[in-house]
Image (cartoon, rainbow, N blue to C red; front, top):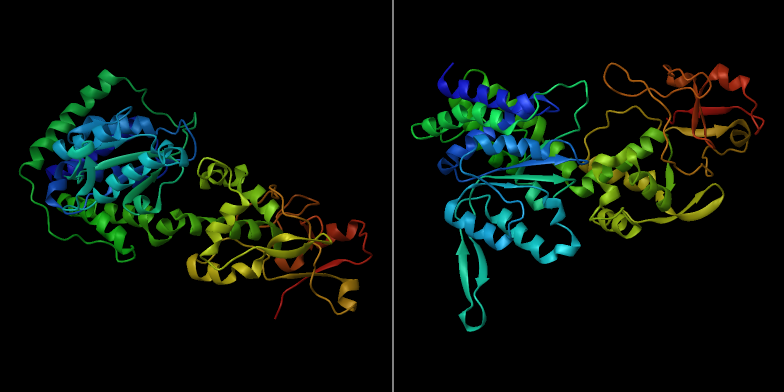
Length: 448
């Protein structure tokens, strides 16, 4: 094992000493990014490290505190004005540590958010200065700001797509009491980090990296640009770091991972999940918004979309580019504004990966009396609610539906029944024991 591989191992060990990562790949990506801050001047791309969480107290600030001790020329910007940040980056080219940027990217801070967006959009690639007007009155002039430097961004919820696209995202979660870490003590952490930082400074002066790295072709073009500097470091390290780095790239920035972070595609995924988990083919706009803003989809951030719960206007805006608009639908005998499942079929096929969840979508539910009338379409389903039936999973992670009568999984879908009014699932024998108000057993039919 060469010096660089050992140093990456020590960097990773230091970070995991204080932070519980959701996956090993997250810790390895952070260690490689630390190395990139010392070697970024050998590259034309400076990918951002994005620390994201669904809620507070998820160790974003703690991880930035750890990074501050081992990266090159750290500059934490808490409380600093954007004007000061622009000049600091232009003059010093530090490793910028931006915390709580979600507070800037909202409608109340429109001017500040545009300036920060410009700083981050231009600072990703070498030679792309950001132009600003400085001075007052007749002394106003255009000034170029060289914003190229490593940057770490921490936020609750999402970022603008153009910034997220330039970032390597690490989603942090609240630590469980059963997940032990060392308690943060600033002096002790400094003592542990100082040898690592000094070693990085020493190696950075003599390390020559390969011009091109072996980047997984499955990544998008932007992700390839972002990961190439980190994988060049991994390739120079050897000792298994290239394989670990490639795996981290696929886990954190694979095509599916990137697409899901774009708001519109993330919304499509959540809507598909809502349809699948409840086995329905229509839903009102009001109820769908209630589900999206519920705790079920907390990590998607719809309850704090642009500072407020997602509204009908916001829902329509996000779905507009997919050619999906609300329309009158019949639910529980009433006509309301909503959506039907078939409206989403084209968008699901084009923008989402194949579903890994078992569902009853594509099955029609009929009663014996309806079948006699020649109808095999239920039109008066119950509205969708935020509650789901408990599920267990198969070996591949797909959920089974659970019988409402015995609360056991329905292992044989053909032997199950769906109550279209209560949207509950039943074993055949438990359904037959239940009084059927319609006078006929519900039948689950698989269309040809």
